[in-house]
Amino acid sequence: VLVVGASSGIGRGIALALAQAGAVVAAAGRRVRALEELCEELGPDHVAVECDVRAPDACETTVDRTVAALGGLDDLVYAAGVSRLMPLINADSDLWHEVLETNVIGASLACRAAFPRLRASAGRAVFLGSSSVGRLFPGLSAYAASKAALNELICGWRTENPDVSFTNVIVGPTTGTEFTSQWDPDLATQRFRFWERHGYLSVAASMDPSDIGDVVCAAMTSPAWMWSVAVHACDSAAEPAIR
Ligand SMILES: NC(=O)c1ccc[n+]([C@@H]2O[C@H](COP(=O)([O-])OP(=O)(O)OC[C@H]3O[C@@H](n4cnc5c(N)ncnc54)[C@H](OP(=O)(O)O)[C@@H]3O)[C@@H](O)[C@H]2O)c1
Image (tube, rainbow, N blue to C red; front, top):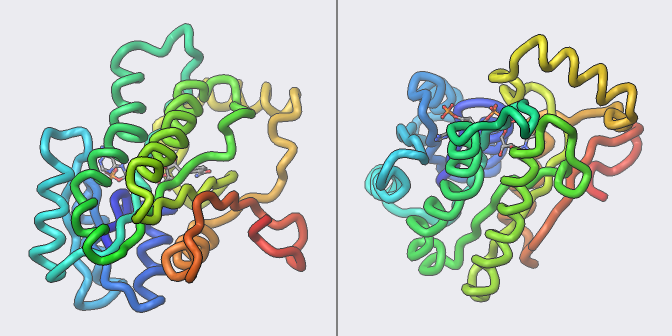
């Protein structure tokens, strides 16, 4: 399995869960040291592959390196993503390019590069959507727009290629990631106060990356194809994680 965006957070959790379930993982992303540390934790067969999805031909090169290192490629997980906290009035062209190139265009190019392998192995592609689509947080509109576009992109891949499985794992708030690491601290404090005051933070509980890893494993191994799975934190430990 190639996991793009495995150097931190949810992608890292997915790589750990897949390896534990018996998969051999190619962990891709820009931060090679973090990927190598992950592979040391995963065990001897797993490989780190440097990949910046925004660079020309990066996805093709990443798939080629994965196939060379692992001897093949069956499945793809696209976990790469960036969130930028910025009101639209201040969102410039650079911000839009970064968000759309990483969250949408990179997803399609990675899928395109892996696609012949996925089809040949009856493999699966899994993407990470966001529960913020349709109920976006003010200040995260560019991010939500990119995830709305990702939803349609996944439908497009599925509609054009009905013989391959494409899963949208729609994720709710998840901690233990670097999702907010690029946010300006003052703007973040101000936004959190606003979100709290206006009821955007009504979901008190959050998940951790291993919760999402378990769901991706289920999507990879289920006899039925999962087109879309919404994953939210349990309100009580007794409740199931998938609703
Ligand atoms: N955390 C949440 O609450 C939440 C909720 C809903 C959906 N999600 C989605 O879950 C996914 C993972 O997010 P996260 O919360 O785990 O955040 P994270 O810790 O920041 O992980 C993002 C990953 O994307 C990779 N990435 C970013 N730009 C890249 C590029 N140009 N080329 C290759 N890889 C790139 C990063 O690796 P490098 O920096 O090493 O390249 C990192 O591994 C994202 O798609 C996010 O939208 C998260």
